[in-house]
Image (cartoon, rainbow, N blue to C red; front, side, top):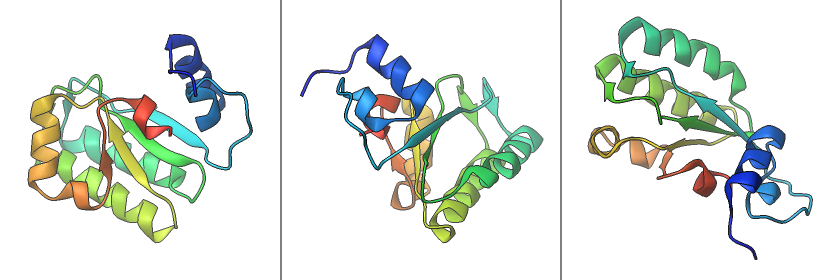
Amino acid sequence: MSTPNDETVADARATGSAAACDGTREASALRVLVVRCPGPRFCGGVAARFARHASHLCRPEPRLVLDFGDVRAIDAAGVLAVAGLARACQVRGGALSLCNASPAVRALLASVGLHNHADILHTHVYAAV
């Protein structure tokens, strides 16, 4: 298996195909939808509105991945929004992954137990495989 590079990652984001992410062109049953969280602060009403809109994307396929690359701070409303989104995905037979969170945001999400309901990954490459 080849190593993912920028071109194959961009292809995976565009097509939603996990196979494209690892450099292969095989068809894959797993599909991924990467959604960027608004930043730099994922707080209050912004977080609540985002979760309301994103909850419509929760289903068994594609797998929903929240990209926290632009988020530097998150408050209780942001944590609740992500937790609610994780629950919505589970209820609908899907799964939620989080990626590209800063160490502080990742630690906060894990400290409240969110890692029990969603995969907290370093990059979207890992979320796609």
